[in-house]
Image 1 (cartoon, one colour):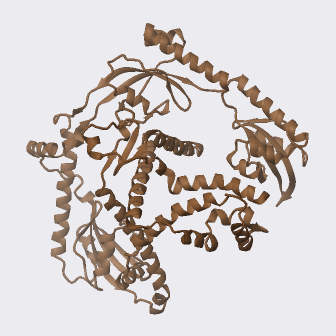
Image 2: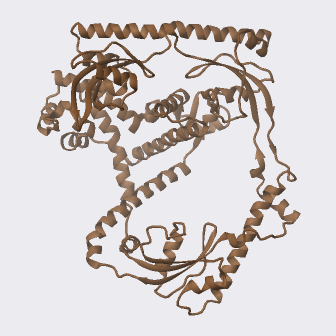
Image 3: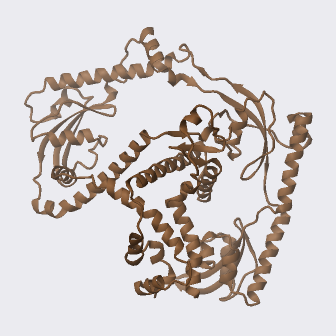
Length: 608
């Protein structure tokens, strides 16, 4: 019974994580009720509180925001910086997953690819998911014991298998439709031979490069007519969208000395409980705020000097085996450390220890104090003016960088889409926001100024336009030079002669090279690879463009294919190419579904 209780407890943690990531990450259960697309377009239905709709299936704005915050928290814990680009990337990833999963589920239902009871049972018996194989309940001596697993599968103690069944029932259809779509992938012998040749066959090649530097400083007349034509054909390049400048007061939520004392007292209480007989592992599982410690009972394993922060290290190495330290303060919070063992390994002293981490966070009184201070400032700002209130409360007014309508990040505050919503809410200049919450504090905004949207005038961008026009003309001239050289080529045994008449050209002989790697001095290019593969020994290619260079190549020789080696590797290459094609076919299929779907992306207006 204890084993089953453990399994049931672990399933609660494992299944929710897996189901959320694999199927319900977009809260498929939240796709309640279809919305008539025409009603929405015609204004009969409001989109407030909705991040978007795919064929009538809604993504709730609150859930969407929660998913973004979870991803950003994970990024922040890794020590990575968060900016608008990061926020937009995460937002797009979550939205795209929702769109794809919604459309795939519709196709699963249309094709009748739902999981059957027999399929579920077959997987449970013969191919259990990884999280079950790795569960200690089903292991003997640290290895998966299939018979022990089957015994518990066939003799349930309650409903502990219900969550597992639901997870498998949800995932099977996705696998079935993936196999169905990817079954169209085929790889020809010609493709396999080409792949093998580029990776295994040695080539001797000459290259003659016409670098852009040949024409880089050439002058060409740029007429006003050309500038005008470029300007109006590319006018969107010169559009500057509207931005708004905000003044703001930011009250950071930081723990006080009282909060630190409270955490210290809790740490001492936990230490006393352990010393009075409670299991360190049990207390750690219940209280530690080290994510890895929850599952391991606080176990840190073995570590040597220099692997932990100084205060933690000094405490761990200073106590005897079996002892528990007083609370140790580091930048992470207070630690209670239990030394399990000590040893010398390769001349280095090491400690095996467990710990309980208690982070120092603002307590209820601190939070209430900061919130009250924020509300009082907001009241005074509306009553006496933003600047006067800031002076009275001894708070510093900060100014934002220009905020765009879609900005989600404000320097000095962090992820804060409320700023753009307030700035573009059609309020008059000088308007003051209510107290707005962020992850780390409270903010009061004031709309300071508006930079209206405009197109830069043609007079202001003339010099900017001349640059691409000049580059185009120089590239055309470089291409002409290369073509004229090619047309005058005779039966010279080598391209090396060219640099004698024109030292600006770059000649290189590439000996015993494979085409799956860049040739010296040249960028990796499928066009270049295909050109060389199509040449016969002694043939010279026409000029081809690679980046800012024009290149002519001559194939000197190519090694013969090792038939025996090719036979050995042929099926491996086929599998590699097939996997690549399957992925491509599936991705193209989902893109086609999106193209034909009725999709409303309301992320920018979901709170309006």
